[in-house]
Amino acid sequence: MHIPDGFLNNNLAGGFIAGALGMLGYCLSKILKTVTIFTGALMGNNGNSNIDSVSFGFSDNAGKYFQNLATIAIWVFAFQMFNIPIQSATSAHLIGGVFAAVLAGPLEGFVIMSSVLIIQALFFSDGGILALGANIFNMAFVGSFLSYYMYKTFLNKNHYLAIFAACLFSVLAGSLSCLIELSISGVVSFLTAFEDMMSMHLVVALLETGITLALLKMFKNLTRDADE
Amino acid sequence: MNKKPFVITIPILVVLLASLFASKRPDTLETIAISYSFESQAKEISSLFTGYSFPFIHNQFMSSFCAGTAGLFIIYIFYKVIKRFVK
Image 1 (cartoon, helix red, strand yellow):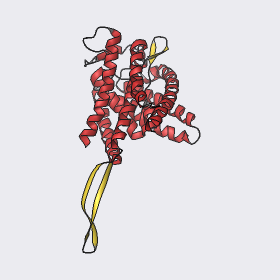
Image 2: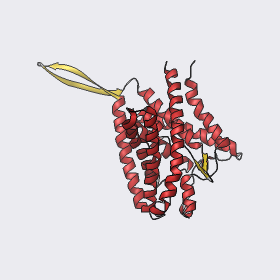
Image 3: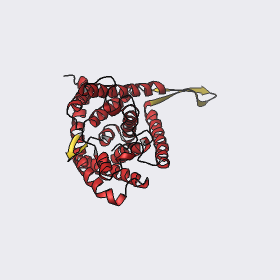
Image 4: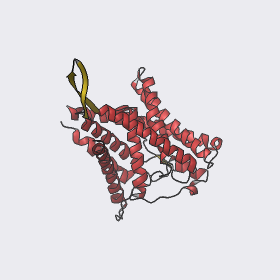
């Protein structure tokens, strides 16, 4: 689903880059807040207590936290390399947005997916540089951040149902937004390509669900045992 | 049994298997682009590992495996740099 350069018009692509940068900044600031600890030294001053000096730094778990994000990103990158044939003359691979968000959280999922997409675009020409904002929107924002809330909605009913709903939403909504972007840019008619786009990605969504369930089980099993 | 090494070796194994067995068929978006005749609008950009191939290695499997492993390493470094930068 990586959109190459040339498919989107420049204004739309620029808008998505600005939006992606804003969201990335927001997520990173929130993440840094969770791994930063503030310590204030309380000093007495004429009976009034005020904070004389405040220092801040990373919490003890910060190193492990970033290591976890890196490990999940590495898994997403590796599994995205594995293209599986799905229909005649077509292949698909894991997006991994639900996998990342369920393991790390929605903000972290967005950052993980964005980092993978940035590296794929810069070093592997997988997805365009100008189209990077749109790809981040489709696969990191819709495919991971929003999909996490779909997962949360169904989580109290059943874990497997929640993963299925999140993966279905991740792939179908992501591909729908991709099609909308392409039709706004005038490269393809929305109504003409809708059926093909959705039917193809329905198969991808089922594949995504199966792989995500297997990977979550494997990853949790390995990291739990490693932590003990 | 310490399973920590598997957390890192599994992605390397997946890259190895992807280099051997990954489908060369076009992905879903490429298929749509071919079906609706707009694939020619795509602008190819050149980068260090374009098409998941390592420069100067002509064996397709080795080229793809080295590029994929380099990708894993780049991601690891990327997070190391972020951590260092914010410190």
